[in-house]
Image (cartoon, rainbow, N blue to C red; front, side, top):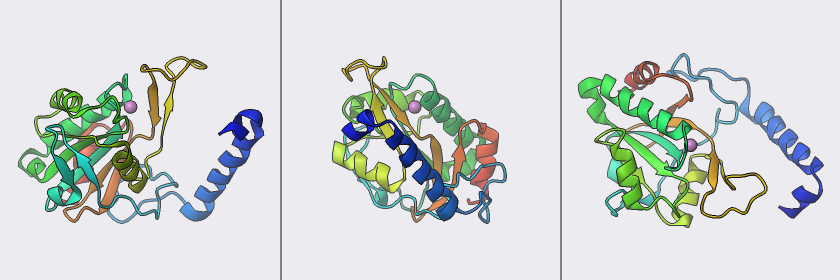
Length: 210
Ligand code: NI
């Protein structure tokens, strides 16, 4: 990363390349068949494979894989428990959306995957997810396991010191993308929801696939 510090113009080149990639590869933003009508499809996600097999550790310390969720819909969000506001807001919306689906909600497993496995131990995850829904699953794991699942779900994250210019320390924050993914009974991506959609819109969006 040193070349970036020495030459800030590198950032512009990289950002430009990403935008170009999104425009060229992503096509125009639009709705896939069955996409929740009011979900904005970020160009970066259009036509991209999302998800796949994973091995992680749940909030009870048990190793779980994608196969443990076969037959259920997974509603998946990536974040970290120290997140000051965005993560808790999204997790609250997910829990409420599942409740709005009433009996059908039992078909959906809300899942929170941390991108901060160093601090988010299974115990920490348990205390955290329990606050949002009784059926919330909190997943952590080794650094390698978390890196792999984040990559599969096209989640971008970056550790940053709490104060700009400071050492990373123990007090760091994690900047991360914020999509809620809906995966079907076979574990395949079917839709995603963006920040700011309320629980009603999310419940409606999920219902189309149940
Ligand atoms: Ni967050």
